[in-house]
Image 1 (tube, rainbow, N blue to C red):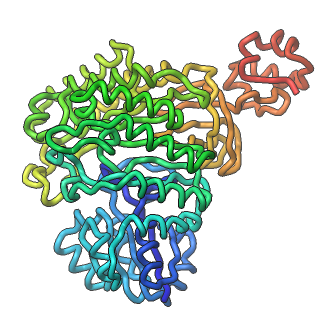
Image 2 (image 1 turned 90 degrees about the vertical axis):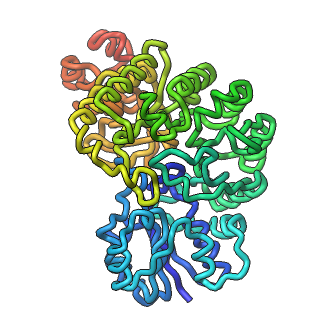
Image 3 (image 1 turned 60 degrees about the vertical axis):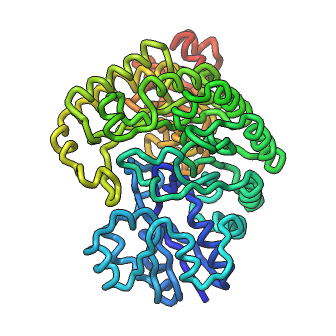
Length: 528
């Protein structure tokens, strides 16, 4: 029996599966299918869009399992997620099953239409339901994760992928008005099971990992008795050491979500975990934290986890130990914060309060690696369902004005402080070719780099910062040979003098280059 896994990508509050990330779901499903005797193939939705002939072949497959769901919409460079409209053309095998967070936003009409085109919908979370549908007898997600690890080799971008690793599921807070994490019961994986999965992936050739499929990394292995979980620094240190003992040549080890309330409630334990992250995870790391709103009224009406004061404290503590530059050019470990627009209780004044919070961050000379501003997405079954999107419509102008102010007055100065001109950034993977190639590190929330010059996809390049966008930088290849550089590269680096250098080539020595273009040219260019 043959089965196809169609990865339409997911983006959830606690899970990212848009390339270069691969979510845990394809691995779980592959492991399940293997357990019940299916021979399985994995395809991304982008691959199928480009290879229509493959879709014809899949019509002979017994089963297709389609994964989809963008619960936290964003802009994606690595892939285009499967849209709801495209769903109705996904009846490509004899039997088709839809899974993932997209099922949370399907109306009854959507479900009837999918049923009409013979696509079966399994509600989210889907894993146990799917295994029962497949006729499985012993459900063991940890075993499926290990058994399904080999599927990563079928990803079109392998080995240039980041494996999202689930440590635990659900949220100890679970009260925020808009969040879909409430659909999950708390489920904890043992460190031994997580380590087995990482080792299985590593043995398959994976070298990039993100401990991202949880709502608060600091509370992994912590004490969940009552109130805010107490972190366990010793257990976390032991866990990190074990990763490196098993997988000594990992290239990326990052995390995703951190609940700032945990840090504020347990500062001493959290400080020790920050030190462990700085020491044992790789640089360029980011703790994504949910501020959502700095307006106390919005915090109360939406039952948000952390107060603005608690978030500011968490930002300060992570900066204290993680802000220093590392060998790859990025700070070791920085906080990032999320704003959600359109929540209950929001007024026009809310936008000013949010902006003042960011001004205070700047005033205190603190660094934020990312500021994510998104409009709330309304899901059935959440407290926001009754509220709807009326505030989004009402505050549309304020939202755009706030976003532009942040990008102009906060993001760019923050980037300049974090990555000054001339800073060398290593291991940039080219993703989009062109006269300006677009490259990023394989990392959590990597900075987009406009690399001046034509470079082939998947080439790794080291580069130096020369200019800034609102959330991106412009760079040129580090130690660029002045006699091989393009005119565009030279003019970007040297201004009007760049053309003179280009005309007077070949340049014979550093001294000659310095005479023509000044000493600063030697920072970016080499001779021979």
